[in-house]
Image (cartoon, rainbow, N blue to C red; front, top):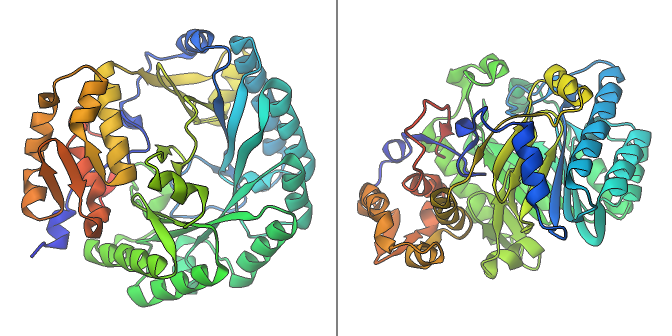
Length: 448
């Protein structure tokens, strides 16, 4: 019998990229990024991410780069800098590339005033060729969401909204400093649907303080009653050494590893019982949703926003802390707004760190992405794609031996298959192919 606490004793990355962000370095700067941009083929389709690092309250569980503001002035000033960064990147490209996907995240993008939503959208479209079929997604904080904001989002062309729900229980909400009534959530969904933004996601989090299986079941029941197109059910990452405000959550209020595992498994069973298709580690979609169709066809992708149908070969990140992914490697903007502002105002692309990819990196990234997306991978196929002998993965396969013995994963020849009932352990399987994991003392979250 598998001992849950023993199985999930290791802390591992979330693998929204490979190599993961802790391995980025200052050798990749704005000059390197400018060269990389100039090398992109003129018609290469792009994906664009815009980071709005402001909220009006601090959620203690939050792992995002954000700042609490009590007036709108810092937000307005930040947008001026963001617009200039867009112009700098567009000038480095020298041409209006087609765009297939846009995502606004934060922080809280809905902190923007309606007029500034229009200004940001206009600036994007002035400098990039946003295709008519492009998906335009935004993260929504339903607390205080106004009809004017929703109308501005609809006018901007938003096609999909992800609404933060987290947990419905008042004791849990108090423990994470995020009070959100069921009525606020329901009203937000109704306004979005009425405005024509019909593709809706709900974001839930398990492993929060004061959560238990009974309260979690009530949250899941409410989420399923709301009937979203997709559900993202994340495990809370408690890393107070990295996110200082998380120290406001006492360790003794957090569910243990076994409770986290049972919450994740309960959510999986309940969502599937209600007709959702399990997507990778922690997403669920209705059977005819594009995400479910991509998963079925083996076309599912994973990036910094999680699972996606977006397969654009380049992702540009705009705003403080935003990460971009290009064929040549990863880049990250300065996380601190004052440093980000100073770099942009000096006419510099605000890249502070990144990493150039080797063919070895790309090969291991392909393995990890397929595991995270499909729960299986054909190592022989990937090795041949990179002109390598499949034996290149022999050490990784050997590292999987303990998980094979526990029945978590099967390795037959050059195939690796995670047992669906152990999908919560897929990050542990992926870690066996991570050649960077032991190189630095990076901070990662519990594996479930």
